[in-house]
Image (cartoon, rainbow, N blue to C red; front, side):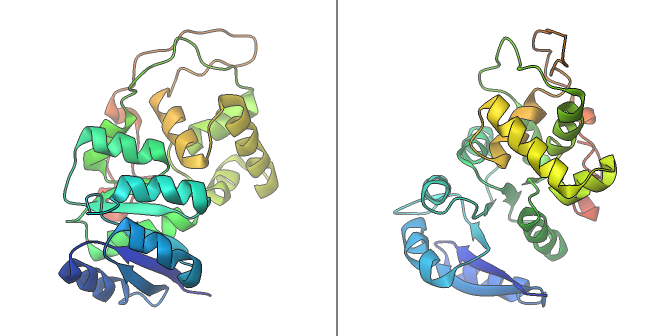
Length: 241
């Protein structure tokens, strides 16, 4: 099995070295490079060809948000996992709306960090439970949602929880290709640019997506207990918010 190639981006050299040491304890992960800011990371990506970018949110020259935006435009499909000491609600929403594959606080354990990298590579959306609620608060709730079929609704519910296609297929007893096609249909129907944006929108509107033949106004945001984090999070996060 090929090791996951990770590029570390942080303006503090000591933290970059520490992250490298932590990640290199996992034989399934290879740190292919380091960068001190987002601009330097963008210059390195074509040559290093990372599978995942692990980046700090706040850096000089080009910060984490700018890096996520640039990667979405220049390197679509390259997941950027943001790791920071800050848990600012607005920052979380901006990063995820821009296309970040996840947002973790820097006091995360080694096992949880390596697990998060594997999950985003598998198409999952990874959020530290301590910032998940902020990410799920809609900034501008819509009055109505597009109508979903029964099949789309079933897949949408699991996409909203951050599950990758393979696990969705197993849970719903569907072919992997069927799930992939349904996710593509959801992206078109809801007008979202990528899977991360789709998962966030679905999670924010959980329980409010009408089925064929129904027209239902947007419901209130579900309480955090509606998000069972034991489905997607590392073991230490295996609890509801």
